[in-house]
Length: 184
Image 1 (cartoon, rainbow, N blue to C red):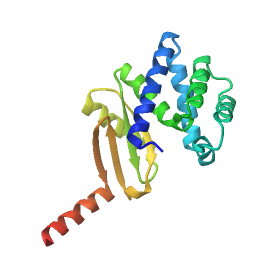
Image 2 (cartoon, one colour):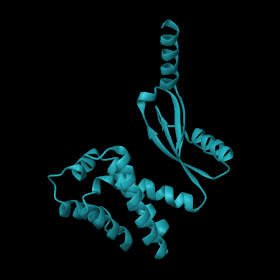
Image 3 (cartoon, rainbow, N blue to C red):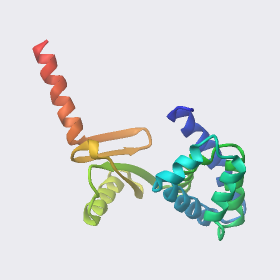
Image 4 (cartoon, rainbow, N blue to C red):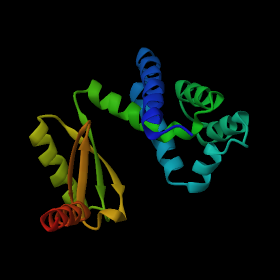
């Protein structure tokens, strides 16, 4: 199995190709929206995600499943799904969708912030966070929210290669390291 870094590289390559195709056909936003919805559906369904990763399930069967899920999608979206499945990369669709969304945002001069929190963030907090990040970066920032109970509290935010970890678990780990260092 490929590591996360190579999966991200592969997903970015597919996203770049899909971006170019959809841009030429003036269907970019529709294709991004369709693939984003499909990526979210896969991420939210463990059984489907496992099936797409399963090497015992044929590429043709995976392509059929994806086509059935996106039967009313744009022709470019359907072709992208077929290509991804034929190349044995159907399990990377959520990452491809994420990379494609980031490319669209960058094309518009916007940013995507990956935000992890221990529990769902209320809408007011989401808006405050997006506004604060927009003010700090000088660009419109869209939030991609994920729950991570291991954070215990607070949030961890990543925009591109920049990461700010204001989580309770990070603070506790920092305190633990300081205590260990002072006892050494």
